[in-house]
Image (cartoon, rainbow, N blue to C red; front, side, top):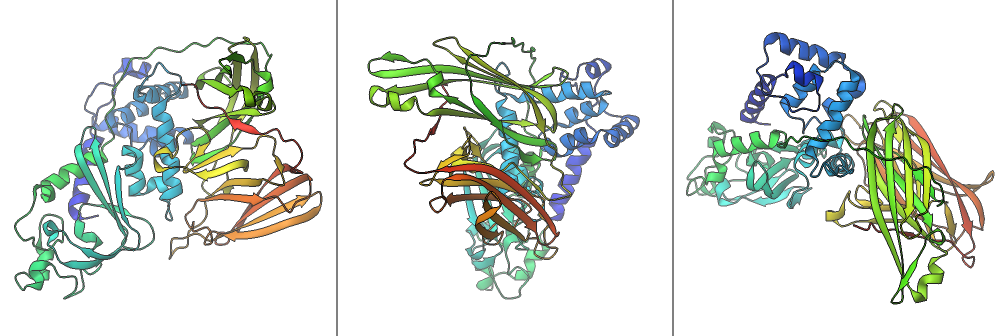
Length: 566
């Protein structure tokens, strides 16, 4: 980061420190938008003390989960609160203020925010978690760029005329372009450079920072320098925060020092928030239990204080009531889910209508199948109550599940893993669908096989995330091995190994995505064990899952995804 940018960042943070506190009335109502007031020295001291005294979960929520999107006045307001109950209410209102439609039970902003964090951890990690990197920060704050120009190995670079022209060699670099960012403007372009080659790209306001020959005399000359009309030493006497060559024909407005400073100040600020008044949502309790279904929950780390919890529901089609019209058999069911604390406070709800349509020719066969649905909700570690309700619209029949939901805490000081998911489908999704839709985890669609029931014709999907791999101090890359063992009783029938290098994943997080052919396995019950070993930290962790293999000729009750009705 250049000196000019460092000075700008200091000024921005100095401005943030002097942002307002809240009135006594607002402290009593954490959901209200705080009014701007200047903090005096005593208030600053109290805020600093309050941050130190916060419980770990609230400190990490403030400094990790929402660090890039929380407004300075909101941060100050949060630090003024006295009780954990007030803090919980504040957090709930924080997300509701940002929802595009607070009247809906699903908070689209919150889900998208944690999807972005999960994506950055999977794609931008480089010795530090992806959310801490500059690319991660910009992705979390502003979402995926409309265009990305990537040069992961650097190479020859022909400078545009506004950068002085001529040819040079570069370090790895990327430019991200957004057509429009609200509150900033149109055609926003940011550049990231990786001069160390470690994979940790940092945001730069100096286009010459990617120039690998910048400090090599006589190399990588600009057009004027190669013509003897300028000296390369002149690059280091500029006062605009860059080391660019002198440009022929003058400097365009986009390269103006103050234009660049203004842009970099704007992209560092949290996105604007429209504060809204909200009403509490009240749900009725349904106690009938006439539709029986299977369900499961899985757990994937997003941050230390947030866990993505996919809730998967599978309903036998034979349980549904179909109506026939013009040769098509149709059934509709409503799925409702609610997650609440043990004290009864609702922290997450979701509701979806689901439709199933089958032509006459496939109807009888469809009754042997299952419909599967999934909703991924971000939750903080802790103990919850999960309520699931399914209603068949045609018959009015209802199925209910009330269960205990223990969301684990993933620390950052030892090797950890997500749930081990056995799937009948693992496939990459298009870039526009990453992190959105049913069964999408990061950049892959992972559909669980609920009963772990496969045939010898199937390929069993294996999905597992491994966290907190230790990076090498010099290369900033991790080194891990993954041993896959299939057992039938006490007998080992299959074993193979992979390394993080083989998988081309050497960050602190590795995602295992494999499709295992089952043709060589005899029908029966098996156990899959995955053992992950961090060779640098000398730590090992294992996960197991049961599954059944049937002969291909046997009738199989397959599952088909249930599309949302809206």
